Image (cartoon, rainbow, N blue to C red; front, side):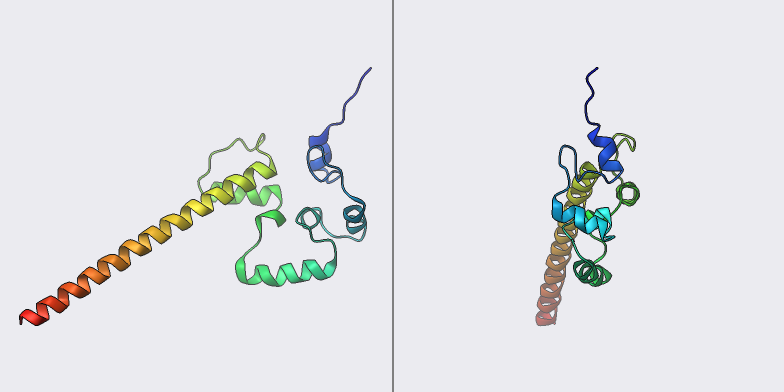
Amino acid sequence: MLSSINWAKLVVQGRAKAHGVPWSKAEKDALKRGVSVEDVRAGLLNEEDVAKEDKKEEKEGKSLFRMKKDELVALAKELGLEFDESAATRAALMQEISQKQKENEEKKKQEKGAESKSEKEETESNKSEQKEN
């Protein structure tokens, strides 16, 4: 009987880095030292790196790479993304969330640009009215 490796199960259990990608020796060592799976997947292999990232995230918010799947699911729902929770992978959720965040940033920039343009027009209009008076 032929059996194959169930990579999806290994990834979910933290026993593999990604589908078809085992942990490197350095990553295995970090996991043995107690660094979380999400942190190791994000490239943080020691407590000093984790502490630096924690301080950075206090200011900027948590990185998608350090979020667990349930956190990504909650964020994706908050952003209004449609997906099948049981089928969507962590990587797919990170990609979709990242894309949606970029779209939202672009919208904000466009709205801000439109606001400043209308403010300029209003200022110029007020100046021309003052000159007429």
